[in-house]
Image (cartoon, rainbow, N blue to C red; front, side):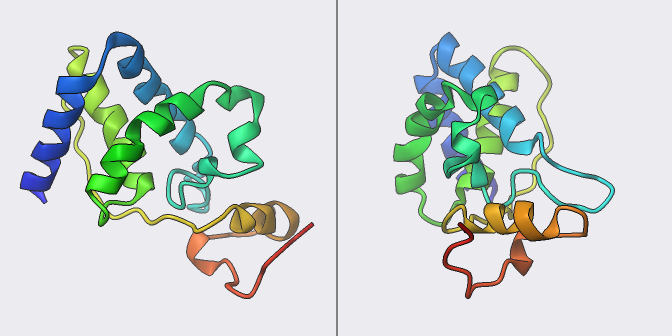
Length: 142
């Protein structure tokens, strides 16, 4: 995994302009911002901010540019989840700006669509929920 991480860092460091660096920090922050320590729900696992409704929230305005910037990396490393890529790019960006090296563990997973998010909001918001517990049979909540 270390060689893999070094390759990603090299690509990000060589291609990030200051505006991209700041966007990657913001993307990572917004990806992780819904995490609840109390019940382990939310956060970057699932990478649900790629989908509606979360992608369209006003607080996430402009983050499509940061997501699109990472798209080629996601294609180059198909075994890497977008959830890991978004948060790792933020950690790399912090270091790139002179901040500390942030310890990082890979292993987050991606949801295939925003259905799990809608399921969570409509059915599980008051209880413990994990992206892994989203019923695969759900096709539409609306």
